[in-house]
Image 1 (cartoon, rainbow, N blue to C red):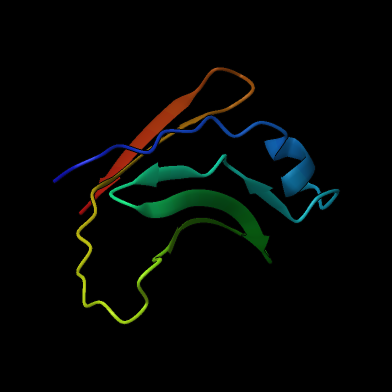
Image 2 (tube, one colour; image 1 turned 90 degrees about the vertical axis):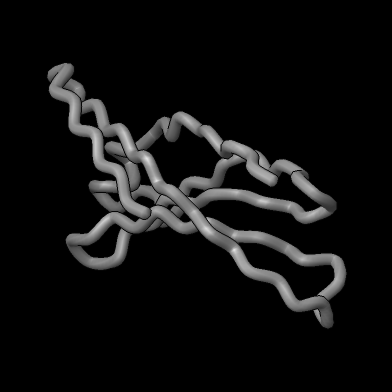
Length: 84
């Protein structure tokens, strides 16, 4: 079973200069589980967080992810990274 979460984060410059501390995606439901992403700043590091809410907290489960991140700077420069 697979699914894809995709989100374009806006207001990233406000995150980088400290005006806001977190940007959240809309939440989506896949396989009766609610998923979402957040972009946060911790010092000089920007973190992409994946969150899920399991309605059956007592169930055992395993999650395998492939992360494809594409960043586009205001000058148009692109960078893509994949992590398994």
